[in-house]
Length: 125
Image 1 (tube, rainbow, N blue to C red):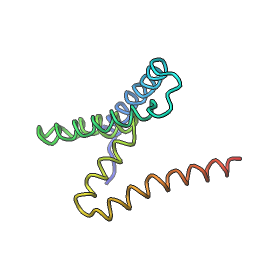
Image 2 (image 1 turned 90 degrees about the horizontal axis):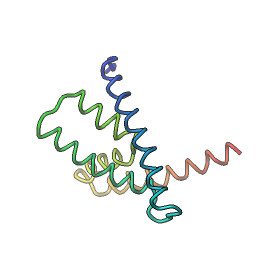
Image 3 (image 1 turned 180 degrees about the horizontal axis):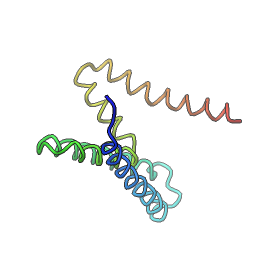
Image 4 (image 1 turned 90 degrees about the vertical axis):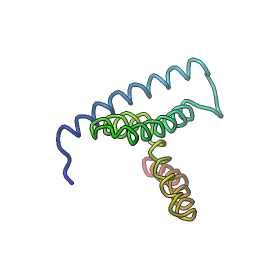
């Protein structure tokens, strides 16, 4: 399926808003809780983003909202605010299919992602 320019525009607009909100959340969190180690700005954004993903996906489904609204809110805004919310949505769908596939998915995303980050750092040096 080839995306049309209107769809890309909604994603880009949502992405711009989400990225600005992410930056503001980082600044606000660092101001309110400087030096926080366990609960960080990333933790805050990931948890808030997961809540918003659940809220918006349900509201969109109940009210049969437009494709443009889904692209703006879910793919654009929350996609740039946090990718963790997308991971949560996919994990929830997999949990309903198979606890084994769910566990493998979570493991692969978390540990392989961190491993890939370490390899990237080592290759960059």
